[in-house]
Image (cartoon, rainbow, N blue to C red; front, side, top):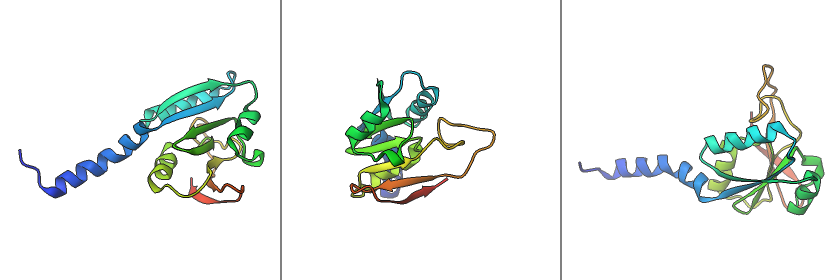
Amino acid sequence: MKLNRYAILLISLLGSSAAMAQAAVVDVFKSPHCGCCGKWVEHLRQNGFEVKTHDVDDVSAARQKLGMPDRLGSCHSAKIGGYVVEGHVPAADIQRLLKEKPKALGLSVPSMPPGSPGMESAKPMPYQTLLVQSDGSTRVFAQH
């Protein structure tokens, strides 16, 4: 079977998101007692990410070590591809971050909004994923 250049381009584009997710390992720092963190890890795995979990006694200290401001904190922190990911950030937002490669510290979904990945709820609430700069300033990266 002979493929034309458009078919090859389409195949490469379709495979790029999955390949991007598999190219970088997500290191997740979480409490061993938090169930929603495990659900978020499963969400990432279902979306093609390789995830390594690290149970820590003090998630806030791990967050601080990664450079994420406490005011943007949640119940777990992660590191992938040179970025920090804080809280229940959807896998699609992480894939977009890795594709666009903005100059930033990373992404945060502060707190634990009902309806975010790992925090599924019968009454989901709208929430935002924030792009966090190295100085701690933020802008909206995605609306959910």
